[in-house]
Image 1: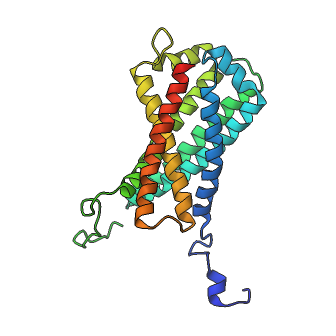
Image 2 (image 1 turned 180 degrees about the horizontal axis):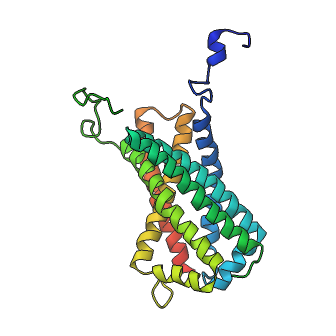
Image 3 (image 1 turned 90 degrees about the vertical axis):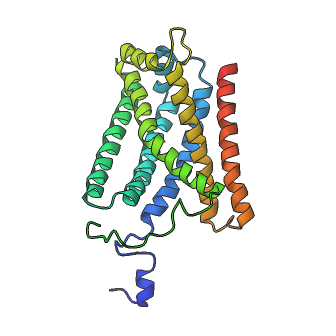
Length: 127
Length: 136
C-alpha cells in the first residue's frame, strides 16, 4: 500500500479502480470524431461522382483509406460507450447484461466488417 | 433491480418539468446518437462492404436509395437528410457538452441560448450540405 492519506489514495478511482476512464474516453473520441466526421462529410460533398469505379478509386487511396479506418475505430468506440450508458439507464434487470453483451458483439462484428472492407479495397484486391 | 419496490416515489421526470430548449437538445443528443449508432453505422458498413464486394453488390446498395436516373428516391432522402441532420445536431450538442464540461455556460440565459444555437446550427449546416450537393 502506498503512503498518503486515505482520500489521496482513492481520489478519482471509484469502486472499479478506473474512475473517470469511461467519461474521459467518451470525450477523447468525441474530439477525434469531430475531425474525422467533418473530413468524411466534406469528402462526400466534394465527390464528383458516386458510381462504383470512382468510389473504388477514392477509397483505394491511402489518404482516404487511413482516415476512414481511423474514423471506424473512433466512431465505433464512441458509440459503444454511448449505447452502454443508454442501456444502463433503461434496462434494470438481467436484460441489462444481455443487452451489454449483445452491444459488444454488435460493435466488434460491425467494426471488423468495416475495417476488412477498407483494407480489401485499399490493398487493391479484386472484387 | 428485480427486488425494487414499485411503490417507491419517483423523482420528478419529463411529465413534471416545464419544457425548455435545454431538455429538448439533451434528448435530441441521445436520440440522434442512438440513431446514428444503429442505422448510421449499419449503413456505413453496408456501403463499405458493398463497395468491397464488387460492382453487383454496390449496385444493390445504390439502387435501394436511388431511382433510375441516379437521383435519390424517397427512402434515400429520408435516410440522407435524417442522418446528416442527426450528425450535425449531435456534433453541435456534443460541442456544447464539451463547453459545459469546463463548467462554463450554466447561467440560465446563456444555457438556453446555447441550446437554441445547436438546433439553429444543425439545421443550417444540413441545409448547406444538401444545397451544395444539389448545386454541384
